[in-house]
Length: 411
Image 1 (tube, rainbow, N blue to C red):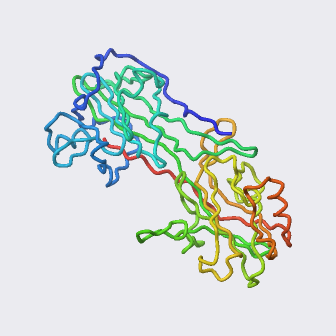
Image 2 (spheres, one colour):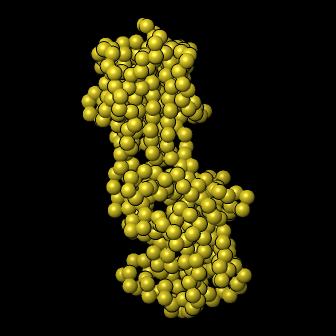
């Protein structure tokens, strides 16, 4: 079962100071950004990446007055290509002299990309707190600094107006745990007014992170490891390149962002019999090294993808073309990175993820390839798994850590 969860807003105090009403948004609506006033507590500094201005021409949103130069464009936190001033692939917050917030939010603010229609302010997502304009890659918000649940703080020489954006995210709920692969997005932003001037704002953004792997062996001498190879040539297939190298002990914990592929390999060690095959029963993830702890999330059931997961785990065939001496001794699959959420509050849990698989060995015959028949009825799949000639052995990965890609912001 999948449900949609809205991030809770934190600010509730509001003091209205009667700032002027807003006019409809236009690229010229916010043309000034002023130097920072001293004395206010610092928020987390924004992270800016070199690709912030890499916006396709058709998706660009104009910023500032027509004809402004590079210096004027940079002063209002926008990008300039020599001819045009436009908003970058980040969160841009501007404060206008007539008392308005102008926020331009890019989908690329988070990884995975943000769902722009999931954003809401402290005062909700109805007018005037809804986007005034948008395209496939940007959403534009403009509203009075006294609206949408904004908190006002009188600090003597100037007044600070503070609000927060947050996004909803989708949660998958299973019998033993709940997970999400969506970014948790929160943005605190401010405008500071001193007499007739506008002070620069601070931006604080919080979002999510992914997990890691390690190798372990059991009585069958089975190892679970994570592929680390990358495509470096044109036409390369990542699902193949991933298994050209593997994370070693010194690489753990391994970090991944939400929805990033995690390439898993399970293999038999120390056997040279070409007539046996490795069989995966159940593969699952936990938030601790203990394979029997909860919460848990099913990845494979009887060797087949968990049909209750919207992002199905994908088995990767291993055959003679792999270049392996004993292909039947290997099983590979790829999953999309996720994080566990609290079953009651549905809040993201900043925890580690460990991957486990129950394994057995099957005797290859002309009539039995030892492969699960995932398209057949569950009872047939289970029956295929019961043909193994050894007891089940559980093998586990090392620690996989969910990390957050910081949002790109400008001030």
